[in-house]
Amino acid sequence: MLTPDGLRDILVKGTRRASQISRHWIAVNQLLDATDLHALEKFKGMSIVDASGNEFPLLTLKTEVKRFGAAGVFTFESIYVGAI
Image 1 (cartoon, rainbow, N blue to C red):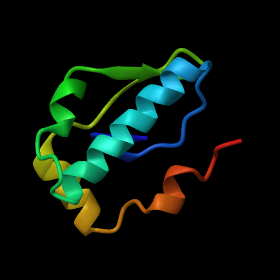
Image 2: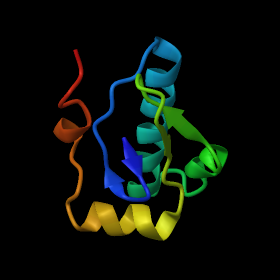
Image 3: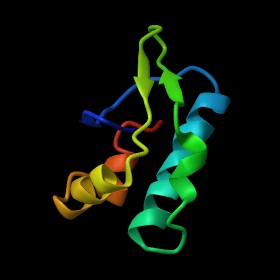
Image 4: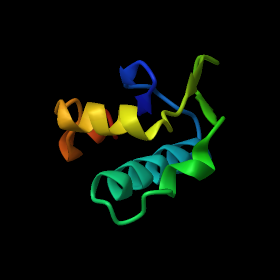
């Protein structure tokens, strides 16, 4: 998942949290593809709690998402590296 600290691999319990991460990635891609420049707004203030109870905020700052994207921090394959 993409946090303010960069790309993080986390283990989540349940499909609800996994779906939230998936929807966030879709919004990130919409921003980077310029198909929806406001897609990340609905994720402001949202965090994901991992299986151990640690909380990770979702990155919603457009400039930072674009910076990570331009730096090649994440690719389609990197999103699903830990998926089972």
